[in-house]
Image (cartoon, rainbow, N blue to C red):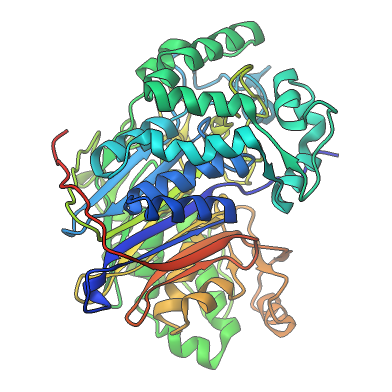
Amino acid sequence: MPPRLQHTAIAVALLCLPGRLTAADDSRWVAVATVNPLATDAAEQIYRDGGNAVDAAITAALTLGVVDGHNSGIGGGCLILVRSPDGEFLAIDGRETAPATATRDMYLRDGQARPDLSQTGPLASGTPGAVAAYALLSERLGALDLADLLAPGAKLAEEGFAVSPSLASALQETERTLRRFPASARELLGEDNQPATAGETVTRRDLARTYRGIASEGAAWFYEGPFAEATDKWMRENGGIMTAADLAAYRPQLRMPIHSRYRGREVVGFPPPSSGGVHVAQMLNMLEGFDLGQMFADDPALAKHLVGEVMKLAFADRAYWLGDSDFVDVPRRLASVGYAKQLAEGISLEHATDVPTHGEPPQWRQDLFGRHTTHIAAADSDGYWVAITATVNTTFGSKVVIPGTGVVMNNEMDDFAIHPGTPNAFGLIGAENNSVFAGKRPLSSMSPTIVLDENGEPLLTVGAAGGPKIITQVLWAIINTIDRGMTPQQAIAAPRVHHQWRPNTLSYEDTTPAAEVDRFRKLGHDVAELPSAGRAQMIARDPEHGFTAVFDPRIQGKATVERLAPSRVPALSSQP
């Protein structure tokens, strides 16, 4: 029986703000929320050592790559969204890219799609982008050296850490596949070739050496040095196509964030190759015409039906239109108010509506997402809001560990449409816009998001893990906060429904009231129960205590808020 799929994107939300907003002195409030207490603790210590929120975010992400490596790591990619103290935004695309010899039909055998090839083994990995993205972010906006941010993760990998229940479960579910690759079994299953149990102490000494190498020589150690050489050698010996030249050629991209409005607030999201920013904006635009808060008060099941219908329409568009805007035409008008109103007119509050295919924004060719867009942000004091979402895709990615490095390689090639109509590991269907092409970035659901209040001041930052459920979790966090007036804790904990068009099923969490589920059926939905609809983290502004930081109660994460003594942060350059 194949292992159960894990939805494994990891959201890290961190920020710090001048104390003048919450106190008369110049102390500062800092906050962090992650899926693992060890990562949160590492970020907290970086704050105390004089780092800013950018430093803390990178530290948390790199530490997660050690203690939560089944979900994310330096063998994968990330999307980063930052608001600096002067109100500028920086969006860094550290998504993986298809190797130079990748082709549209590389996963076809005798005319049939082979998802096993795009999900496991040497052909499953895109060129990793996380290290380059973190290095770029650190250089532009960090207060500490990248080596300082690698140190906590390296120390844990070297000296050992307690296995979390999540990691223990992942090892148990994937042990058979991991044993197919000797280096993977040696690094992840240990000397006895058995999965560690929760609470057991394990080390990742090869990964520690990799972290030390990057700390000593910078990202070049990874992209042009020992890691690139080891990867090239393993791929050549095992039928892969990634080469040292692919790694040397990798560059993170700077993108222009998507800005939309919802009930007077500004919602800032990530553009393609993320589908999250586009479709969160699109769904909120559709909901703008409904009094959603009153609907939830009067008839929660009907309100959730409406939200599910909005999701269905957005995911139908995602399947057809979305892809890497450096390679294909992606209409900006997918996120326009006018197009959203057009789609919303087809929604019925009486029954579930069949959505046979995608919509088409009017005159869509006239306004497309740009190619290789550049946007530079600068900061010279505390006041950052940072959202990072990182992933290796499914549990332990491709299941490949490059020998001698400890690096788990992603299986993000499965996020391409390996053949039109063939679903990926998350059941998502893609079209030609998301087909495989050399150098192209696969479509992502990662959705780092920042919301500003009516005065343009940061209100909250939110991100999530869970494949396509990332998008709908971010939507729920915004709806629950703005429309339903929930506290951050309530907004993240509330039961969610999810619809992604195909399969045509309204999924609901097992905490959903039975009466609501019955109502969904009466409205014509095919329904399916989920034990969990993802994992989200949120940090929100709190006028009394600086911040409220929340981790999803569906996991054993950690969120903290702390008031620190003043620290001097050097002025930062905005030059490339």
